[in-house]
Length: 466
Image 1: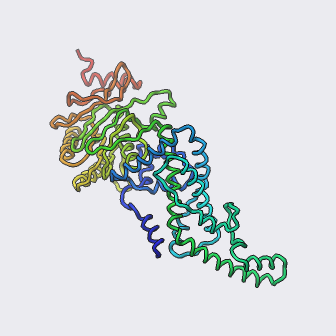
Image 2: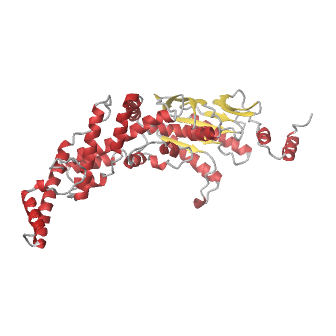
């Protein structure tokens, strides 16, 4: 492999470690919704997002948000709307030709279709380059590929089609003329013509091979332009913000889940924004009844953390976030029938994997919904309490929800506000005591459950006794 091929290979293998965006696309916390709301011009841009790896270095995350802020300023200026649409029209024609460029870098002579692809890309590059140079955008610089266009468009027509033009060779021009006029035997002439065309393709390859790295850079950076325009527009469309970076404590003011918010809006209901803060080595315990929104809060925290470490806007009024090495979300019934695991066994396995990562020295985000909630209350309380105690000893950002009485541990506590005037309030407030919530009957009544059932349940609890 030549040096150009090696440079592309290094680019392709960069950051092989870490979760890929496509690995979490079908997770339950709503990241596919965010992806679906990106108005990308090119399918290549979507592919590169899916292939991208989660960032764990704060410097990388900061650079990603610096670029997003720059594009956000650009798209928010009304007088740039026409220019943005012109850029998007060009990017609509952007195709994924990475394999073509890799083959050339490895010594393969391109065919006419591949040369057409390179010519088309180079023309898009030059147009978008000209557009960007008229703006304040500095974070992306496109290479000058005018010489590549000249190589693939020797007649100067500046159209995206390609074939081996007469202008490449006077011999080729002459033999084509003879073939069309019928002066020579067509079979011999066609063979001779094909030899000349192959020689020309070889000459084009030699000239392209020294520029293929720049062409590859152009392809990736054009997709970045597309992605950053889409992310910047999404900030406004979904009411997202650019977060600040923190070392020790993650906090959100007015956090929301965009997908759930949109569903509620379609039903003419209002999403209740959440304020929450938690610190490394100080687990946050959230108590509240079933249907109190605890699971949604954890899912939204997972969503926000991934959005942060993939450089997207954050659904909140304000956010300050710690970058972590690994994100663990344990919520809901995720039993694995193929492995023969019950929901409890699957939960224990997930929590054990999380603790192994924490004990291995990684800074993790641990989001655990109702640990041991499906077992008997005595053992469940013991397991939940022990989990909190272990997490307090590790470099972990931890949020745990429960309906158990967790008494013999000192940690930050919040509770779901619960019913107020017959209406469920999902906001979080500081928990004064350690007692478990007791709103199951009120929720069942509010849902219109069978009155006899509820009445007998109250009697069992002694609610109706005087």
